[in-house]
Length: 93
Image (cartoon, rainbow, N blue to C red; front, side):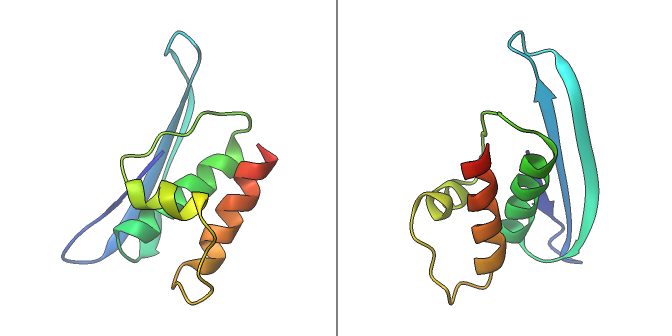
């Protein structure tokens, strides 16, 4: 799963790929999710991927995402609700 943000327009897009143990493609997704920034794009990618796929190993190139998932979230964080939703999905998976 990955998210990206266009620096000029702030349009964010997300996508993800599900592969088997042989690294063969099984399924995937891609979508535009509106305006935002890179952290928001990364969290939306994680949220949508975990909503679609269960029992997966998650890889992210954005260390802050994994750190925010692992620690107690600050309720004042602008992405608090999205972070909490991702935490619930990771616990489910």
